Length: 403
Image 1 (cartoon, one colour):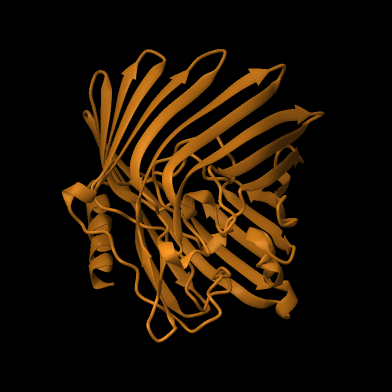
Image 2 (cartoon, helix red, strand yellow; image 1 turned 45 degrees about the vertical axis):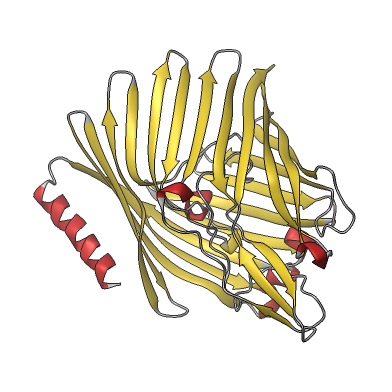
C-alpha cells in the first residue's frame, strides 16, 4: 500500500513539473448496486477516480492510468495501476513497453481471441470490459505494411485470472466429489524466461473486408483441478496451470448496410475435468470456440445478434463440460433527445441450460461530461453460467463525470 501511494505521489509530482506538456483526462464515478431479492442490500458501494496521463516528446510517448477505488462497504481504499507504458515510434513500426491491456477480436461481451490480457472476474462479467481486462507487463511490436499490420507480443511473466473470493456472492458453483475433499493452494507458474508467453497477429483493413489471423503460446488463465485419491479414502485436489497453445481468426464485412462479424479460436490439449480418477480427473482435448455476429440499424434502432459455440473434439461422456455449449447475445440501443438519452438492452442466453442474463439500462447526459446510468442485472435459470446466480438480481446506479 505504501509503495503504491508513493508511486502515485511521484506521478503527481511529475505532472506538476511538466503540466504544460502533460495531457490529462479521466473520470470520477459513484457506483451503487443493490440486491433485489435480499431487501435491496448493497452489493456495491464504490467511488472511483480514474486518472489518465499522456506525455509525448519527439518519437516517444508515455501513458499512465492510476485508479483509486474506495469501497463504502468495507472502508477500503484500493490504489492500482491499470496501465503504465511508453511507446516508441519509428518509420514502419511502433514499440510499446510496460503494463498494458491488449485487445484482439471482433466479439461484443465475449472473449474468444481476446485472450492475451487475462480477466478480473471478482464481480463476474458485470463491470465494463476495460475494468475486467487486467493490464499485463508486455512488449508489443506493431509493424505496418500498407493496409496490413504484423503484431508480436512477448509477456515475460504469467498473470492468471482473478477469481471471486470464496465468500463472494460471485463465487461460482463447484462440482466436488461427495467424499471428504481437501484443496491445496494453486501451483504457481515460475517467473523465468522459459515460462513466458508469445502471441502473433496479422491484421488487414480493407474497403471490402477486414480480418485478423493469430497464433499464441500462452498459459491457460484458469487452473486445472487434478484429483488424487488418498489411502484414507479422501480426495486431494491440486489446482495447476498448464500451457494452452491456440490459433484463431476474426473478420468483419459490410453487406447492404449491415455488418457481419465472425471469430474463432482453436485450442490444443486443453485440460477438462472428468469423472475418471485413474487420470486424476483430467482429460486433454482439443477445443474450438467460435462466433458469428450481425449488426444493423433498423429504423434508427441499432440491433446486434451473436451466436457463440464451444465444442470439445473427441468428446468422452465422463467429461464434466458439455460437448457443445451454445450461447446467444442480443443488443438493442436507441438514442433520444438529441442523443442525450440512450436506452440499451443487452442479453446473454445460454441455450444448453436455458439460463440468461438480462441487462437493460438507461444513460442520460445531464450536462457536458456529466452522465447517469440506471439499470438492472437480472439472472434467469437454475444452473449454468448465469442461472447459478439467480439470487443475485440487482439494480444499479452510476453517476459519472468525465473530464
